[in-house]
Amino acid sequence: MSIIIKNVYKSFENIDAIMDFSMEFERDKIHCIIGPSGCGKTTLINILTGILQKDSGDIEGIYDKNHSYVFQEDRLLPWRTVKENILFVLEDRYSKDEADSLADKYINLVELNSFKDSYPRELSGGMKQRTSIARALAYRGDIFIMDEPFKGLDYKIKKSLMDYILSSWNNKGRYFIFVTHDMIEAVYMADYIHKMQGPPLKYLETIKVDKEYRKKYFAREMDMSL
Ligand SMILES: Nc1ncnc2c1ncn2[C@@H]1O[C@H](COP(=O)(O)OP(=O)(O)OP(=O)(O)O)[C@@H](O)[C@H]1O
Image 1 (tube, protein in one colour):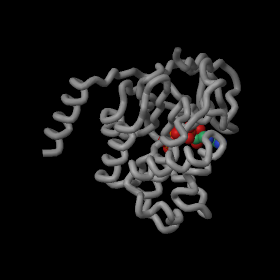
Image 2 (spheres, protein in one colour):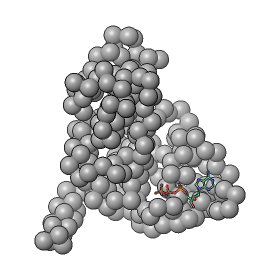
Image 3 (cartoon, protein in one colour):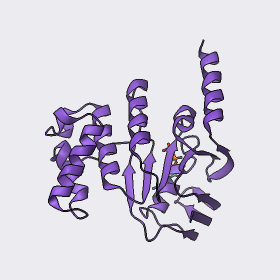
Image 4 (spheres, protein in one colour):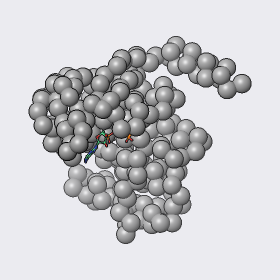
């Protein structure tokens, strides 16, 4: 079963952000949407998650599902600690003990043990994003969505965050959609890279990323940087 977007339109006052747009997201795979700033990526994601209403078109396979998000900015509750921010999304889904041990598990995974009682203002940008990632992973939504989650972070932190996500994302029966404008992030993480342009959002091509593609891509990148 896939998520199927069919002939979707969305206009804002001054711009047609999405016009007659169709595509599919396969279950159990990491799909990356890549495209230049302003092409309509976030608008598409916001429609998928119900934050925005489409003007017309159909989307199949999302209405019975819940979502985990990681956004560009961390969106943590400033008056709650790291652990409390994570517990907040787990309270309705799990018993108190289960929520507590899940929160600890993911705090441990993103190596924030010694900061679990800290408030967001006491954390660096990378630590806040690690908290957001731990929260999204712990919630285990059917659809895991990340919209430019590594923007502004340095390479080392970015790589460690990508590794945390890849090692802890349990793909069985779930969807993963990842928006970026960075091809290196896309090749590192994705099974499929969907190249876009716009506005209005237009689909250019899909690249299937396997081990071989990844190896060749990074070898070429290395050559170019020498
Ligand atoms: N709420 C809004 N009101 C008016 N115009 C909007 C609104 N949201 C997005 N747009 C416009 O729609 C187009 C697509 O925006 P969108 O944020 O989806 O692009 P994006 O590809 O996600 O960009 P970025 O990579 O910079 O986040 C842009 O021209 C943007 O200015």
